[in-house]
Length: 284
Image (tube, rainbow, N blue to C red; front, side, top):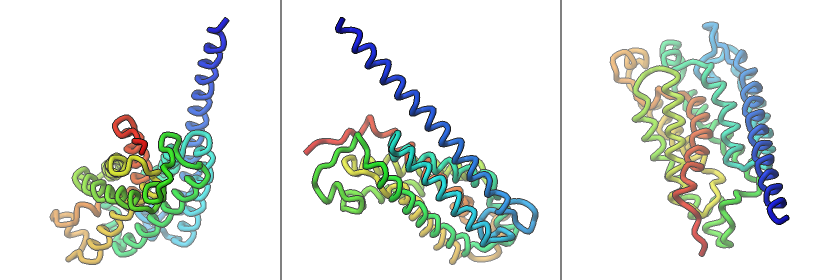
């Protein structure tokens, strides 16, 4: 008689997990479809989607379209944050951005199309701001993570407290990892390197601040990348096309702003989740 309730409880738990998985898969697919719909607006004067929004033949339309798609993906992710958790929700947004990134140009299109590196640096800064906004909305709706309870210590619980700021340093390690990984000029490797950079940031960030909710951690690798990209874009010598052919083009600039934005969101959530078993929060 006592075994039946436990059996029903186990079945109910499995049903809940299954429903969450189905909802998550549908959300990822929907985010990808919504974001893929804006790719035509990124078409450049060369007749193919450019490597950056600024490279579009209609940059204002492209920016508005991408912004609307990102907002829709974020709203969808906020719903997922309530059903699953906020870290998984960031993964959903990243999948949407990744769909755009994989269908746009690579570094060859940037340099041989005579696109502006400086405008690309500005685009990096815009993506950093958008990721910060998405993180804020998603964690606001989620109410936190179930495996990171509040400690009632401001320096630990605050999303911008000392512990959180320490975790943001993981973004440096993430960008270094991305720099090492992007060995070729292909689009797939650029996106993969960005995801690896995000993964390293998420993993290190959780190690540095295991008791702090990572509200803005996903923006850390994007912010560091923006600083590095801007420095290189404004100081690069010679013609970018010539430098790319001769091997003098900065290696990190092989990653496009869209690539890093997608990698920061997807990779950070994967890395943070991966380290869960290794960094269980310690109670005071």
